Length: 140
Image (cartoon, rainbow, N blue to C red; front, top):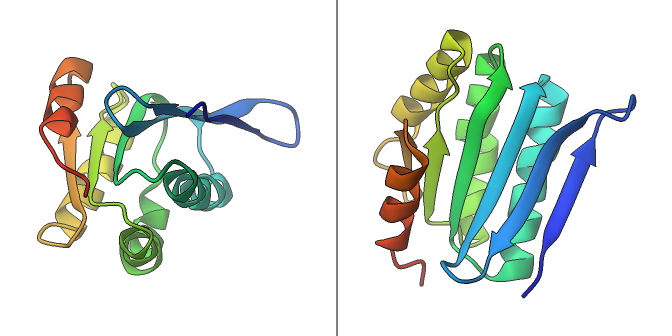
């Protein structure tokens, strides 16, 4: 299945790209630049739509290009998005950390918040490590 969606701000700046990797059965999500709470919410909801459309239970969230913090949305992600994502069939999420310290702090906070849930979510510093971890997981 071929699936790719790009999301832009009102000013035309791309902040999110979602592609399906059919070979390894996961969504590759590329977040770009500064991500406002509104864009985190809109983009995260788009991930659920993509997971349903592609019938996959795995995603890799590449945040290497993210600038700044999105920590304010972590409560929403924990309490609202993660339960809906699990209901939609998502079971494994890998997050590739940004070099930006504030973005790293947000990612690490989110990982701690959702530990032990039905959706296993883990941060990585290397794309290879994240991909290999996802390949090892069975989403069905």
